[in-house]
Image 1 (tube, rainbow, N blue to C red):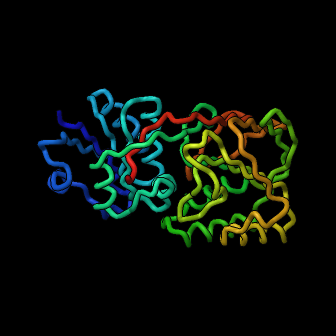
Image 2: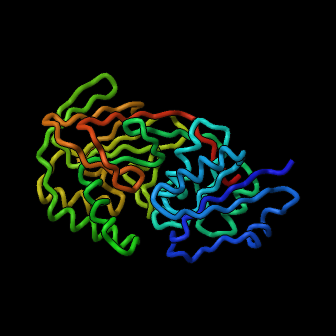
Image 3: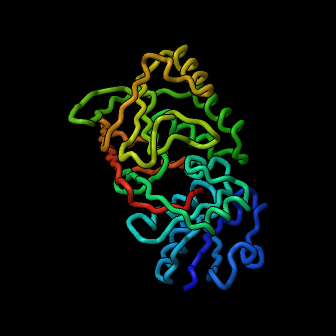
Length: 296
């Protein structure tokens, strides 16, 4: 019986340089073994609609071809299903793909999908919406807001956004955190919750995080002096932020964040701005509920 394999492609990812055609794919996936369908996105959230349609059509493997946004849309539809996620990284950051050691090289990534070696990974939710790599509240979300205004999506652009945000960032609001049976009040510089050990661009705030341990890794950074803000940023860029004594790390299964003055918090989810409608955030881990193609 042939495997039904659907490709959900963001045609502008990677500046549109990676064109998938039926002839190209048939060189990797012979008609005697696979039934191939290629669908291209045309607007925001189109990948979600296309993935749902592919599930209805009986797809057994659905391959997200794009950056973190496309991968998030496709993967969100496959949580708690028997359909396998394949990843063909074509974006700039590619945090989840990098964490799963899926290369950007087309031939190698396609070979991983063809071999159909799979693992089950943890996913997480932010106010009920799935995420796979990380969520940030505070400074991180403001960096992403600046970064999304750039026309280029490269590491250097991310560094520039970080430095620009650092100059103008001020956060004086107090939030209530609830986790592991404790409650604390904090005026945070950064709250970062991660399911994976990489943010994209080979950068990480949580190098010990795992997609298969049933835990979220959390970085809590309180309000800092201007000097320590600069120091934290520099240490982070060199993966030494743990040297700063104010930086705290927690592992947990659920976290609640509530703004005490009912301010709507700014958040990023998997590298994209996430619009909140509430002044509180609930984050939880969901173990082993997404199946992904990975290298043997």
